[in-house]
Picture: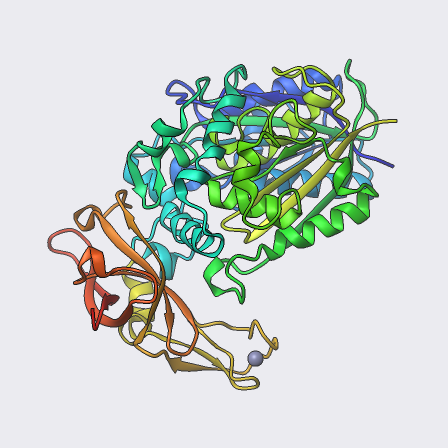
Length: 379
Length: 130
Ligand SMILES: [Zn+2]
């Protein structure tokens, strides 16, 4: 049996001043249920910030009630910024082992109700409270420390790595639900304000509200082509990247990739569409190199030579990735899967040809906990 | 914050981490299971107070309560026993903060609960022999 993606729904990622987290979740969930032409047996709500940003828990119950769905199983799943993909991983496993026909996965994050300083704390909640937050160490600072290690090892400059930010913004121009619909030149990215050196504002993924939902089911009752989950894998590593033996090695990503290729019975070169956790350029580069899409140290020059463009053999982040589509933490992994699903069904903003297999990679922290999905059209 | 601070004060003041009684693996912060050999026989161990910078950043954004520290200089430091620690860098000239610079820990105020609340102390690092 293969799990099918039978419904998708999403909101634009932006400052939704007039909408609560429940409003956002209802919006994407109704679209997904409507597309699927089914009523879900279970709801998994993926979220990581609600108790901090909305002073609300028990949201799975609240949202199910608001959707008019009662007498089903509903719960919240939290695993920091990979909560969305983790909910899909768990939904897929339950669908394959339990007496269920369909599972609704809702990811939602309300980030803009917080003050700017609180938002910065919110993005670091997945790191140690006692040893990172206590000292005021921000998430972007950790990304910056990692970035400099990468730059030193491979003798790549931050200006060269900014090619990834150029690419993300180029890909999101026509994507209506993306947070940004405009391009930025390499020069303007490299002259934007420093957030945490060497990272600049236009290297970092933005803060935005958003919700994305999927219906997973055994049979596809939607009006769209079958898209199957060919593999769903997850792997955890140390919470802090700096406690690893090799600080640049992405252990969880490596493990997920190996397990994914075995489970899906595909080869790396079969992958046409890539959605990865492209939160800052050096991490994007390290993921691509870890997975073998680029040689170590070469990912940013591969971007420049067009290897990851929309119409290349492998398209990276066709709706702009975390940088330009946006990164509403627990919804991000679901936006990735929807992007690949809609591309495979030829109904995405960019009409790409000959795309049959997509890989989605979503992680919390710096490869602390990673989830990888491989999706394909049915043959 | 005050109860967790009280519980951890020695660790913050003296950089106390862990050592595995089975394989001598050292770590900061403390751990409950040895990452190397999975032993549960763990003891407290004070970390060396000196090391070298292996990465650094200057941050222009802050969490609540750290606004007065901006821009905040932060280092990833390899302590003399090989354990890595992330810490704020203070009392150091910007041009001295570079890869392989020698650093030592200093005892500093970290944060406070407003103007009349509890004050929290802990380790920061500064460049030496610059
Ligand atoms: Zn041990």
